[in-house]
Amino acid sequence: MKILAVGAHPDDLEITCAGTLAKFVKEGHEVTMCHALNGDKGHFHISPSELGPTRIEEARLAAESINAKALYAGYRDCEILYTPETLARFVDIIRSEKPDLIITHSPDDYMPDHIITGQLVTDASFHATVPYFKTKVEEAHDVLPPIYYMDNFAGSNFLPTEYVDITDTLELKKEAMRKHESQIIWLMEHDNVDILDLIETVAKFRGLQCGVKYAEGFKKYEGWGRTVTRRLLP
Ligand SMILES: [Zn+2]
Image 1 (cartoon, rainbow, N blue to C red):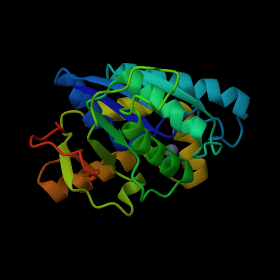
Image 2 (cartoon, rainbow, N blue to C red; image 1 turned 180 degrees about the horizontal axis):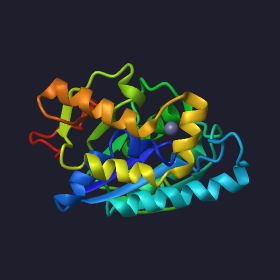
Image 3 (cartoon, rainbow, N blue to C red; image 1 turned 30 degrees about the vertical axis):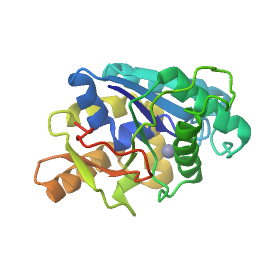
Image 4 (spheres, helix red, strand yellow; image 1 turned 30 degrees about the horizontal axis):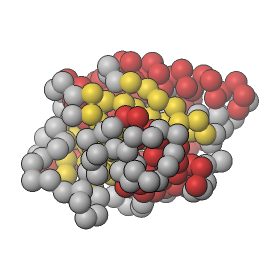
């Protein structure tokens, strides 16, 4: 399968679903880790013009560490809106990547960038299949891909409907997070959060809910046409 995971900021996928993405890769699937924004405002001291390129590179290294492909959609923190242009951009990404499965943010997330990104990706995955919806990439996607919403930050306001055992890939997930050096500092200073500890704590909590040591939780998007009879998550 081809899996397209789309997070808003360069570290969102690492925090919430990288254990599952690493597991997909280990099982021979192709994974693209797309971040919509460049994370340029995620620091107290480093200016956006300096931080943006740094974080795109951190995302590239993180994706590389689990043998996934990194992709930047081209927007800046707090500046993504739902417009015809942003919708067309995600249609083009989906038409280029041709995913069999999409993972993105839940509508119940806490952060506007996350919510808008998740909504754009969900809607674009439908429009990408409509040939007369014209965008830069001409060829329409031939699959209405199933969508899974990844967990919210710290598991807040999110009750998973499916779980993935990441006991074997938790270390890979943490390794991917360590590539986001700028954010380990920012999350401590801005949110008083030790992100590597949070990742392990949430994984342990999700694991308790499904009877394994460490897990990640997901919620399936239940829109018509997105359901298949076999399990898609690893
Ligand atoms: Zn984020």
